[in-house]
Length: 114
Length: 115
Image (cartoon, rainbow over all chains, first blue to last red; front, side):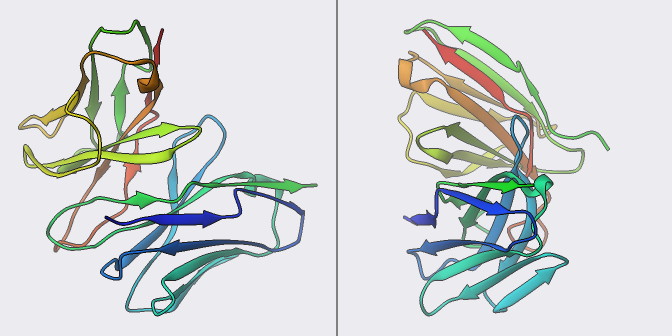
């Protein structure tokens, strides 16, 4: 089955700096890669996703890049703010009629220091 | 629109007991999946239901089971509880269109403690 590895497990940055979180996946058939943000004590929420037919997607301060050949994808957060502090999870899945099954990475705890 | 609702939010059980958790998806969402979240293992997929059928199952023992009703509400059951079953159990619903995996909308979870 699919295996997703995520690094680093913790990341501390100064407010205004950029943060990068990297994930690798094992199943070359995976074609859908979402990122979820989980604030302390709250539910995970989707912040951005990318499908394998594109290499990069941006939404304001957040961007995701995908390298299918190397089987890795990354989350980039620019101009970080204290409210970006949370645990971020990457995930991978095969998007088809077989259903909705995500394999998550282990998570990255991002701390943005004011 | 109401979000995904999970009950109970917190529960304490002892080893050997069984537990049933309930999940009501967002109206119109027919896919319901369950995840186990623990500090050491992160988010692990348990199973997914769509139109009352289990379509996918993760690598969990047979003590973990689930079902979905005709109104898309889902339940999961864990029998013969073990200490290691202590975790936050998250339910997520999704509106699938054209076979594409869609955004998961998570509930707040049911926190199970096994003593």
